[in-house]
Image (cartoon, rainbow, N blue to C red):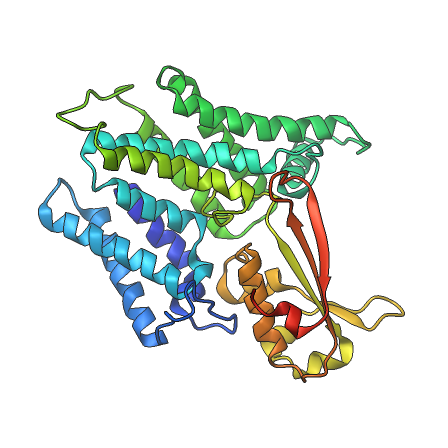
Amino acid sequence: MRILAGFEILLIAATWPLWWGHSSFPRIPLIHSLSPPIVADRIVVGMLLAACLIVAGSFGQQRWVRTVRAAGLAAALMLCVSNQHRLQAWHWLFALGLGASFFKPESGLQLLRSVLASIYVCSALSRIAPVAYQGMSAAIVDQLLRMTGIHFEVPAESKIEIMCHALNIGELAVGLLLLWPKSRRFGMPSAMLLHGTLLLALGPLGLGHHPAVSIWNVCFLCLIPVVFSGPVRYLPSGETGKRWSFRAATLFVWLFPLSGLFGIADNWPAWQLYSTRPETWVLRIKEADIQYLEHDIQQHVSKPEPVDDWVVLKLDRWSLAETDSPLYPQGRFQREVIGRVLATLPDDAEFRIDISEPEPWFWWQRIHRTMTTRTELAPE
Protein backbone atom coordinates (compact mmCIF):
# COMPACT_ATOMS: atom_id res chain seq x y z
CA MET A 1 0.00 0.00 0.00
CA ARG A 2 2.90 2.36 0.60
CA ILE A 3 4.07 1.74 -2.97
CA LEU A 4 0.59 2.30 -4.40
CA ALA A 5 0.06 5.45 -2.34
CA GLY A 6 3.43 6.88 -3.34
CA PHE A 7 2.79 6.33 -7.03
CA GLU A 8 -0.75 7.69 -6.70
CA ILE A 9 0.79 10.97 -5.56
CA LEU A 10 3.26 10.96 -8.46
CA LEU A 11 0.56 10.19 -11.03
CA ILE A 12 -1.81 12.85 -9.68
CA ALA A 13 1.06 15.33 -9.92
CA ALA A 14 1.74 14.23 -13.51
CA THR A 15 -1.94 14.78 -14.45
CA TRP A 16 -2.61 17.70 -12.09
CA PRO A 17 -5.04 19.71 -14.31
CA LEU A 18 -7.40 16.71 -14.36
CA TRP A 19 -7.67 16.79 -10.57
CA TRP A 20 -7.52 20.50 -9.82
CA GLY A 21 -10.02 21.34 -12.56
CA HIS A 22 -8.43 24.47 -14.02
CA SER A 23 -8.76 23.53 -17.69
CA SER A 24 -11.17 24.18 -20.54
CA PHE A 25 -11.91 20.48 -20.94
CA PRO A 26 -15.38 19.73 -19.56
CA ARG A 27 -15.92 17.89 -16.29
CA ILE A 28 -18.38 15.07 -16.96
CA PRO A 29 -19.82 13.60 -13.74
CA LEU A 30 -20.47 9.89 -13.52
CA ILE A 31 -23.86 10.66 -11.98
CA HIS A 32 -25.37 13.85 -13.38
CA SER A 33 -27.14 14.80 -10.17
CA LEU A 34 -23.83 14.65 -8.27
CA SER A 35 -21.69 17.46 -9.65
CA PRO A 36 -20.15 19.34 -6.71
CA PRO A 37 -18.78 22.88 -7.02
CA ILE A 38 -15.11 23.20 -7.86
CA VAL A 39 -14.21 24.28 -4.32
CA ALA A 40 -15.75 21.14 -2.78
CA ASP A 41 -14.06 19.02 -5.43
CA ARG A 42 -10.66 20.48 -4.58
CA ILE A 43 -11.19 19.82 -0.88
CA VAL A 44 -11.72 16.15 -1.69
CA VAL A 45 -8.52 16.18 -3.79
CA GLY A 46 -6.70 17.53 -0.74
CA MET A 47 -8.20 14.76 1.40
CA LEU A 48 -7.01 12.12 -1.05
CA LEU A 49 -3.47 13.51 -1.19
CA ALA A 50 -3.30 13.76 2.62
CA ALA A 51 -4.45 10.15 2.93
CA CYS A 52 -1.85 9.04 0.37
CA LEU A 53 0.93 10.84 2.25
CA ILE A 54 -0.06 9.21 5.53
CA VAL A 55 -0.41 5.74 4.01
CA ALA A 56 2.89 6.07 2.13
CA GLY A 57 4.72 7.05 5.30
CA SER A 58 3.00 4.78 7.81
CA PHE A 59 4.22 1.48 9.19
CA GLY A 60 2.29 -1.21 11.02
CA GLN A 61 -1.46 -1.69 11.27
CA GLN A 62 -2.49 1.14 13.60
CA ARG A 63 -6.23 1.64 13.83
CA TRP A 64 -6.02 5.30 12.88
CA VAL A 65 -4.18 4.41 9.67
CA ARG A 66 -7.07 2.10 8.80
CA THR A 67 -9.41 5.07 9.25
CA VAL A 68 -7.20 7.15 6.97
CA ARG A 69 -7.31 4.41 4.32
CA ALA A 70 -11.11 4.39 4.53
CA ALA A 71 -11.19 8.18 4.07
CA GLY A 72 -8.78 7.86 1.16
CA LEU A 73 -10.93 5.22 -0.52
CA ALA A 74 -14.05 7.37 -0.09
CA ALA A 75 -12.24 10.41 -1.54
CA ALA A 76 -10.87 8.38 -4.48
CA LEU A 77 -14.36 7.15 -5.41
CA MET A 78 -16.02 10.54 -4.88
CA LEU A 79 -13.57 12.17 -7.29
CA CYS A 80 -14.54 9.64 -9.98
CA VAL A 81 -18.23 10.31 -9.39
CA SER A 82 -17.71 14.05 -9.84
CA ASN A 83 -15.64 13.51 -13.02
CA GLN A 84 -15.54 10.12 -14.73
CA HIS A 85 -12.44 11.23 -16.65
CA ARG A 86 -10.55 10.48 -13.41
CA LEU A 87 -11.31 6.78 -13.70
CA GLN A 88 -7.78 6.33 -14.96
CA ALA A 89 -6.50 2.76 -14.78
CA TRP A 90 -3.83 3.67 -12.22
CA HIS A 91 -6.36 5.45 -10.00
CA TRP A 92 -8.69 2.44 -10.15
CA LEU A 93 -5.77 0.18 -9.19
CA PHE A 94 -5.11 2.37 -6.14
CA ALA A 95 -8.78 2.20 -5.13
CA LEU A 96 -8.79 -1.60 -5.46
CA GLY A 97 -5.60 -1.79 -3.43
CA LEU A 98 -7.20 0.28 -0.67
CA GLY A 99 -10.23 -2.01 -0.73
CA ALA A 100 -8.04 -5.11 -0.46
CA SER A 101 -6.24 -3.63 2.56
CA PHE A 102 -9.38 -3.96 4.72
CA PHE A 103 -9.19 -7.75 4.60
CA LYS A 104 -6.85 -9.77 6.79
CA PRO A 105 -3.28 -9.51 5.52
CA GLU A 106 -3.14 -12.93 3.84
CA SER A 107 -6.51 -12.37 2.15
CA GLY A 108 -5.62 -8.85 1.09
CA LEU A 109 -2.41 -10.15 -0.45
CA GLN A 110 -4.28 -12.82 -2.40
CA LEU A 111 -6.74 -10.20 -3.65
CA LEU A 112 -3.98 -7.85 -4.75
CA ARG A 113 -2.25 -10.71 -6.55
CA SER A 114 -5.51 -11.42 -8.39
CA VAL A 115 -5.92 -7.74 -9.28
CA LEU A 116 -2.43 -7.50 -10.78
CA ALA A 117 -2.78 -10.78 -12.68
CA SER A 118 -6.15 -9.66 -14.07
CA ILE A 119 -4.57 -6.51 -15.50
CA TYR A 120 -2.30 -8.54 -17.78
CA VAL A 121 -4.98 -11.07 -18.71
CA CYS A 122 -7.74 -8.56 -19.52
CA SER A 123 -5.42 -6.12 -21.25
CA ALA A 124 -4.11 -8.86 -23.52
CA LEU A 125 -7.56 -10.29 -24.25
CA SER A 126 -8.85 -6.87 -25.29
CA ARG A 127 -6.10 -6.61 -27.91
CA ILE A 128 -6.28 -10.15 -29.29
CA ALA A 129 -7.86 -10.03 -32.75
CA PRO A 130 -7.44 -11.76 -36.13
CA VAL A 131 -5.37 -8.77 -37.25
CA ALA A 132 -2.86 -7.78 -34.57
CA TYR A 133 -0.84 -5.19 -36.49
CA GLN A 134 -2.89 -2.19 -35.41
CA GLY A 135 -3.11 0.32 -32.59
CA MET A 136 -0.51 0.46 -29.85
CA SER A 137 0.68 -3.12 -30.36
CA ALA A 138 1.86 -2.13 -33.84
CA ALA A 139 3.41 1.11 -32.57
CA ILE A 140 5.37 -0.70 -29.84
CA VAL A 141 6.66 -3.40 -32.21
CA ASP A 142 7.60 -0.81 -34.85
CA GLN A 143 9.48 1.27 -32.28
CA LEU A 144 11.38 -1.73 -30.92
CA LEU A 145 12.37 -2.72 -34.44
CA ARG A 146 13.54 0.82 -35.21
CA MET A 147 15.61 0.86 -32.03
CA THR A 148 17.29 -2.39 -33.06
CA GLY A 149 17.82 -1.19 -36.62
CA ILE A 150 15.63 -3.94 -38.12
CA HIS A 151 13.31 -2.95 -40.98
CA PHE A 152 10.55 -5.12 -42.42
CA GLU A 153 7.99 -4.56 -45.11
CA VAL A 154 4.43 -4.82 -43.86
CA PRO A 155 2.48 -7.22 -46.10
CA ALA A 156 -0.36 -9.33 -44.78
CA GLU A 157 0.78 -12.17 -42.53
CA SER A 158 4.23 -10.61 -42.28
CA LYS A 159 6.80 -11.15 -39.54
CA ILE A 160 5.65 -7.92 -37.88
CA GLU A 161 2.10 -9.30 -37.68
CA ILE A 162 3.45 -12.39 -35.94
CA MET A 163 5.43 -10.22 -33.53
CA CYS A 164 2.30 -8.26 -32.62
CA HIS A 165 0.47 -11.51 -31.90
CA ALA A 166 3.44 -12.64 -29.82
CA LEU A 167 3.37 -9.41 -27.79
CA ASN A 168 -0.32 -9.82 -26.95
CA ILE A 169 -0.07 -13.54 -26.20
CA GLY A 170 3.06 -12.93 -24.15
CA GLU A 171 1.22 -10.45 -21.93
CA LEU A 172 -1.60 -12.97 -21.47
CA ALA A 173 0.98 -15.59 -20.49
CA VAL A 174 2.47 -13.22 -17.90
CA GLY A 175 -0.91 -12.87 -16.21
CA LEU A 176 -1.52 -16.60 -16.18
CA LEU A 177 1.97 -17.32 -14.83
CA LEU A 178 1.40 -14.87 -11.99
CA LEU A 179 -2.03 -16.35 -11.30
CA TRP A 180 -0.88 -19.91 -10.61
CA PRO A 181 1.27 -20.22 -7.46
CA LYS A 182 3.75 -22.77 -8.85
CA SER A 183 4.52 -20.69 -11.94
CA ARG A 184 5.00 -17.31 -10.24
CA ARG A 185 8.77 -17.70 -10.21
CA PHE A 186 8.55 -17.52 -14.02
CA GLY A 187 5.82 -14.88 -14.05
CA MET A 188 7.72 -12.31 -11.98
CA PRO A 189 10.78 -11.97 -14.25
CA SER A 190 8.50 -12.11 -17.31
CA ALA A 191 6.43 -9.21 -15.95
CA MET A 192 9.57 -7.23 -15.16
CA LEU A 193 10.86 -7.85 -18.69
CA LEU A 194 7.53 -6.76 -20.17
CA HIS A 195 7.48 -3.46 -18.27
CA GLY A 196 11.13 -2.83 -19.00
CA THR A 197 10.38 -3.31 -22.70
CA LEU A 198 7.40 -0.95 -22.51
CA LEU A 199 9.53 1.67 -20.76
CA LEU A 200 12.09 1.38 -23.54
CA ALA A 201 9.49 1.64 -26.32
CA LEU A 202 7.18 4.27 -24.82
CA GLY A 203 9.55 6.28 -22.63
CA PRO A 204 11.84 9.22 -23.47
CA LEU A 205 14.19 7.01 -25.49
CA GLY A 206 11.32 5.63 -27.58
CA LEU A 207 7.99 7.13 -28.59
CA GLY A 208 8.16 9.76 -25.83
CA HIS A 209 4.71 9.22 -24.38
CA HIS A 210 3.40 11.26 -21.47
CA PRO A 211 5.49 10.91 -18.27
CA ALA A 212 2.52 9.22 -16.55
CA VAL A 213 3.03 6.21 -18.85
CA SER A 214 6.59 5.75 -17.57
CA ILE A 215 5.51 6.27 -13.96
CA TRP A 216 2.82 3.59 -14.37
CA ASN A 217 5.36 1.07 -15.68
CA VAL A 218 7.89 1.90 -12.96
CA CYS A 219 5.10 1.38 -10.42
CA PHE A 220 4.70 -2.20 -11.65
CA LEU A 221 8.44 -2.78 -11.56
CA CYS A 222 8.27 -1.91 -7.85
CA LEU A 223 5.00 -3.75 -7.12
CA ILE A 224 5.53 -7.11 -8.79
CA PRO A 225 8.51 -8.36 -6.75
CA VAL A 226 6.94 -7.12 -3.50
CA VAL A 227 3.46 -8.58 -4.05
CA PHE A 228 4.46 -11.91 -5.58
CA SER A 229 7.58 -12.73 -3.57
CA GLY A 230 7.41 -14.67 -0.34
CA PRO A 231 5.21 -17.69 0.41
CA VAL A 232 3.49 -19.20 -2.60
CA ARG A 233 0.29 -19.54 -0.62
CA TYR A 234 -0.56 -18.37 2.90
CA LEU A 235 -2.27 -20.78 5.24
CA PRO A 236 -5.67 -19.38 6.23
CA SER A 237 -5.99 -18.12 9.78
CA GLY A 238 -9.41 -18.88 11.18
CA GLU A 239 -12.01 -18.36 8.50
CA THR A 240 -9.81 -16.28 6.22
CA GLY A 241 -10.34 -17.17 2.60
CA LYS A 242 -13.68 -18.86 3.35
CA ARG A 243 -15.73 -15.80 4.21
CA TRP A 244 -18.33 -14.76 1.66
CA SER A 245 -16.90 -11.23 1.50
CA PHE A 246 -13.51 -12.51 0.38
CA ARG A 247 -15.07 -14.81 -2.20
CA ALA A 248 -17.29 -12.00 -3.48
CA ALA A 249 -14.29 -9.67 -3.74
CA THR A 250 -12.31 -12.29 -5.67
CA LEU A 251 -15.19 -12.79 -8.11
CA PHE A 252 -15.49 -9.02 -8.57
CA VAL A 253 -11.77 -8.66 -9.25
CA TRP A 254 -12.11 -11.05 -12.20
CA LEU A 255 -15.69 -10.82 -13.46
CA PHE A 256 -15.90 -7.03 -13.47
CA PRO A 257 -12.95 -6.44 -15.85
CA LEU A 258 -13.83 -9.47 -18.00
CA SER A 259 -17.33 -8.04 -18.44
CA GLY A 260 -15.74 -5.03 -20.11
CA LEU A 261 -14.98 -7.19 -23.13
CA PHE A 262 -18.76 -7.36 -23.69
CA GLY A 263 -19.47 -3.69 -23.01
CA ILE A 264 -20.63 -3.96 -19.38
CA ALA A 265 -17.73 -2.49 -17.38
CA ASP A 266 -16.00 0.66 -18.60
CA ASN A 267 -12.92 0.18 -20.73
CA TRP A 268 -10.20 1.46 -18.41
CA PRO A 269 -11.46 -0.09 -15.15
CA ALA A 270 -11.68 -3.28 -17.24
CA TRP A 271 -7.94 -2.94 -17.96
CA GLN A 272 -8.37 -2.45 -21.71
CA LEU A 273 -5.01 -0.71 -21.99
CA TYR A 274 -3.56 0.21 -25.39
CA SER A 275 -6.52 -1.64 -26.88
CA THR A 276 -8.32 -0.89 -30.13
CA ARG A 277 -11.54 -2.28 -28.66
CA PRO A 278 -12.94 0.96 -27.05
CA GLU A 279 -15.43 3.18 -28.85
CA THR A 280 -14.26 6.17 -30.88
CA TRP A 281 -16.37 9.24 -31.65
CA VAL A 282 -15.12 11.69 -34.30
CA LEU A 283 -16.77 15.13 -34.48
CA ARG A 284 -16.71 16.96 -37.82
CA ILE A 285 -17.99 20.50 -38.21
CA LYS A 286 -17.96 23.08 -41.00
CA GLU A 287 -14.85 25.20 -41.26
CA ALA A 288 -16.97 28.36 -41.07
CA ASP A 289 -18.22 27.37 -37.60
CA ILE A 290 -14.76 27.20 -36.01
CA GLN A 291 -15.17 30.84 -34.97
CA TYR A 292 -17.87 29.86 -32.47
CA LEU A 293 -15.54 27.54 -30.57
CA GLU A 294 -13.52 28.73 -27.60
CA HIS A 295 -9.92 29.66 -28.38
CA ASP A 296 -8.53 26.71 -26.38
CA ILE A 297 -10.61 24.36 -28.50
CA GLN A 298 -9.88 25.96 -31.87
CA GLN A 299 -6.21 25.00 -31.74
CA HIS A 300 -7.19 21.31 -31.70
CA VAL A 301 -9.19 21.50 -34.94
CA SER A 302 -7.64 19.89 -38.01
CA LYS A 303 -7.11 21.58 -41.35
CA PRO A 304 -9.78 20.78 -43.96
CA GLU A 305 -9.00 18.35 -46.74
CA PRO A 306 -8.54 19.80 -50.25
CA VAL A 307 -11.89 20.70 -51.87
CA ASP A 308 -13.65 20.07 -48.54
CA ASP A 309 -14.98 22.35 -45.81
CA TRP A 310 -15.29 19.76 -43.03
CA VAL A 311 -12.79 19.85 -40.14
CA VAL A 312 -12.23 17.42 -37.25
CA LEU A 313 -12.10 18.40 -33.59
CA LYS A 314 -9.40 16.15 -32.14
CA LEU A 315 -10.88 15.31 -28.75
CA ASP A 316 -7.90 13.19 -27.73
CA ARG A 317 -5.41 16.01 -28.30
CA TRP A 318 -7.66 18.50 -26.55
CA SER A 319 -7.90 16.21 -23.54
CA LEU A 320 -4.15 15.61 -23.39
CA ALA A 321 -3.33 19.29 -23.77
CA GLU A 322 -5.79 20.51 -21.13
CA THR A 323 -5.74 17.71 -18.55
CA ASP A 324 -2.39 15.97 -19.19
CA SER A 325 -4.51 12.80 -19.49
CA PRO A 326 -5.73 10.73 -22.44
CA LEU A 327 -9.38 10.94 -23.40
CA TYR A 328 -11.61 8.65 -21.34
CA PRO A 329 -12.46 5.99 -23.96
CA GLN A 330 -16.12 5.50 -23.16
CA GLY A 331 -18.92 6.20 -25.62
CA ARG A 332 -21.14 8.02 -23.13
CA PHE A 333 -18.23 10.24 -22.05
CA GLN A 334 -17.33 11.21 -25.62
CA ARG A 335 -21.04 11.84 -26.31
CA GLU A 336 -21.21 14.27 -23.39
CA VAL A 337 -18.03 16.09 -24.40
CA ILE A 338 -19.25 16.47 -27.98
CA GLY A 339 -22.62 17.68 -26.65
CA ARG A 340 -20.87 20.41 -24.64
CA VAL A 341 -18.96 21.50 -27.77
CA LEU A 342 -22.07 21.55 -29.97
CA ALA A 343 -23.85 23.66 -27.36
CA THR A 344 -21.51 26.54 -28.30
CA LEU A 345 -22.46 26.33 -31.99
CA PRO A 346 -25.56 27.89 -33.61
CA ASP A 347 -28.62 25.67 -33.66
CA ASP A 348 -28.48 25.41 -37.45
CA ALA A 349 -24.78 24.49 -37.55
CA GLU A 350 -24.07 21.35 -39.53
CA PHE A 351 -22.04 18.56 -37.94
CA ARG A 352 -21.30 14.89 -38.38
CA ILE A 353 -20.29 12.38 -35.73
CA ASP A 354 -18.64 9.20 -37.01
CA ILE A 355 -18.86 6.42 -34.43
CA SER A 356 -16.91 3.17 -34.38
CA GLU A 357 -17.78 0.71 -31.63
CA PRO A 358 -17.16 -2.99 -30.97
CA GLU A 359 -19.80 -5.61 -31.51
CA PRO A 360 -21.31 -6.79 -28.19
CA TRP A 361 -19.87 -10.32 -28.28
CA PHE A 362 -17.20 -10.36 -30.99
CA TRP A 363 -15.38 -7.24 -29.77
CA TRP A 364 -12.68 -7.41 -32.45
CA GLN A 365 -15.33 -6.62 -35.06
CA ARG A 366 -16.58 -3.03 -35.42
CA ILE A 367 -19.94 -1.37 -35.97
CA HIS A 368 -19.85 1.98 -37.78
CA ARG A 369 -22.62 4.56 -37.68
CA THR A 370 -23.07 8.31 -38.13
CA MET A 371 -25.06 10.99 -36.31
CA THR A 372 -26.04 14.27 -37.96
CA THR A 373 -28.73 15.69 -35.66
CA ARG A 374 -28.85 16.84 -32.04
CA THR A 375 -31.85 14.56 -31.45
CA GLU A 376 -29.70 11.51 -32.23
CA LEU A 377 -27.01 12.78 -29.88
CA ALA A 378 -29.36 13.06 -26.91
CA PRO A 379 -28.70 10.26 -24.34
CA GLU A 380 -31.00 7.29 -24.72
